[in-house]
Image (cartoon, rainbow, N blue to C red; front, side, top):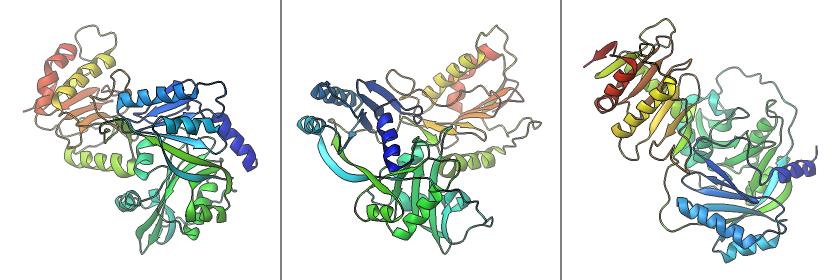
Length: 419
């Protein structure tokens, strides 16, 4: 396929509800517009054809929706869109922002990597140099941009069944000096989020690697201006369109954190598991029971010892745990849901599972086939579900005080406890 055909696919999908969206993001459709509510900000995306639409009314409706949530909004308008939309946005108080080229590069034949040793220099996948994750974060988050998708936002979006976050780093003397990131789930495109360097050699090395990833097999999509645009053109990209952003903010201060988000293994999930392993002497072995050293204070219930008929034990158990976590945690404190060897999430229990807000991520407290945990960032309280022992451990004085009676009513007396 050529660039024109790829761009036609982009236009066909623009303004449609995505098949996948990140945890913590609410997607709503309002006529020709798809809104994404992140809790901290929002985006509006319109269908390419809005003929016969009352554009002023459409713009006004979006402002009302974002104002209700206190979210600033970014709305992208392409150079070939009807000029009426840009005029109505400006009239409604939107401020024109950056203007960029939209660039596309087709996939390249995949190449099998030959270097199986620990990389020392050059451009490498960050997952191969995990010890540099914190350094990569500092370099990427500290880069002024502009980026099509800031590093922290793309990490928060996380992965899906269709793709993953791609991170390439430049190592010099074994230390990360530059970072580039992209997301492989923007079907039919891999969306480039940003580069900390616009150097042509770095840009080409990174984009060639992404274009050669055999499991992607779809083109790269980038937004760029200035020297980054020139570097991308040199690297084999072709300009397909131009796009300008329009911005509007309702009165007041927006939330600084999303209500829920994916835990990236490099930056969040892995380090949290490391602390849990160390502090609780965790041994994830099917025959090792108990799998942790029970903290003080704690109590452990047998999930099969309930002494009354429970039509839906996982749901009832989870409802009790969630009520307790609301009581035992501080306002605006985040909880973490962990699933051993699977994706984990961070969520605010007061900003999820309420009308108009995102559902709480994760699969609850009942260990359905793997170790499930709810816990605070400082590990002072939480629950641990053991799937093979079929037990639930609850620790932390405030959490125990909040739910012990209800759990005992549901499951019977604890089979062990530590005071």
